[in-house]
Length: 257
Image (cartoon, rainbow, N blue to C red; front, side, top):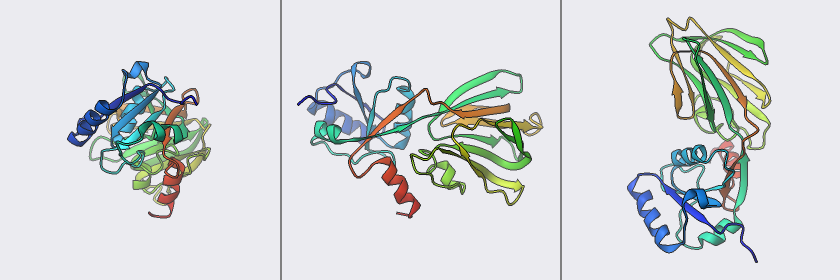
């Protein structure tokens, strides 16, 4: 019977454990350069998984991660044995990134994509002042806060959860809009938006209260406006062992284990 995956490429973080695992697997299994592979095996933690997804964004290559990091929420358990059998049995999780377009105070546009979240942060001791619009309708004329983030279902258990945002099932057609340490409106805890929403954040007093915009690990400083929407033209495929899918892990997080 034909296999789904025949050509494996390995990538790894620079951590010693990940490098040792890389050497062991490369000695055991035939492998090819990433551009010739039909599956990428990533060895490291969640940061390495996000980096790998960004590196191969637009190629539709599935990523199978094995944990050689700390938390490993997005990763499978590491084992040297039966790699091809695990790949054949793996279940697919497909997510779409957020597209961020950020204009700086000089009017220059910067573009980046995020798998987890797009966040805006104050750059100084002064709180940011933000105007929040959804689909060109102002929803909050002035939010005074340390910042705000737009999170995907895949990213809802990451920074979004840490600042009090809700956990979303992976197949939820929603985005989180979550404030970071809101001062005014004091009682606003965020919103759930349909994933086709177009979100606009205007930075008020941008010169005196500078704000940076971050799409996962890509940062632009001194921004004046940020537009965020889901980019459905890009499919990102992660592979997980049966019973350990991203849906299951997100569900476990909702019940606190």
